[in-house]
Amino acid sequence: MRAKIQQAFSNKVESIGLPILALCWVSFFWGTTWLASKEGVKHMPALQLATIRQFMGGILYVGYFILKKEPWPKEKQWQTILVLSILNFVCSNGLSTWGVKYISSGLGAIIGAIFPIWIVVICFFKGERIARLAVAGILICFVGVCIIFIDHLSDFLNPQFQFGIFLSVASTITWAFGILHTMKKAASFNPYFSLGLQMLISSCILFGITETTGTNIPLNQIPASSWWSIGYLVIIGSVLTFIAFIYTLQHLPKEVSSIYAYINPIVAILLGFILFDETLTLAIVIGVLVTLIGLYLVNSSIRKIKK
Image (tube, rainbow, N blue to C red):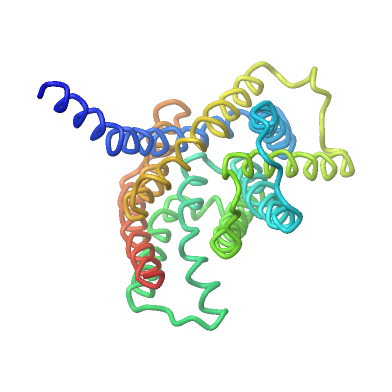
């Protein structure tokens, strides 16, 4: 009897406890990666940081599955991997990393969370009907973002701040396209192996871009603080948290696994305020809460469309 109770408890922890723990990990640590990126790009080109991060993360993933003798993708799957490499890592990760060079990590995280809005907009232009819930959510998000930017109106006169906002918004659009492409062309092979290949391919593309434009600096000129940021982004952001993220998607309902998107900006804002003395005002707090409510409505409408 005792053995059965212990087995039942163990199964319960494994089926619910571990996925929830993985979700908590994703919710917190993906929020911290915005600060690590901000610290890293202070002393080196942003796209070079993204290149090194993705190359090292990709090597770890791909090397592991080569040792495990994991089957390589088939011919048609390579096309999907290449497209996702460009959308998710060259564009989305590259642009968001570049963006936080000119704006705060907290603001970058807030903008990064609005990608569900672009999913609705893209689906609308593809001929799909927009639910009233989605329209309400978009309007609420717009109000929330306006409240947030009350404290940044003077910053818009700064061309670098404008450029950072542009890069960050563009990264969310490409991420939305990447999500839709993943849903449409979901690969049938190991998702972790696919992730590593996307990182590795994207790092090669980014390296070609940065070398052609002459924006890279010699590796021996990269300071220790940036290398520590890269190490954190590789181990925590690119490896452990992505593993936890895919694990949550496989073991939790989408309604639960998507909670991380609402927590990441809060983590980034609070830690940015505590560690980097980034601005935290009542307008920002209210604006973030309003924006997250709008995003919740948008996400709810997307889930209803899928059903």
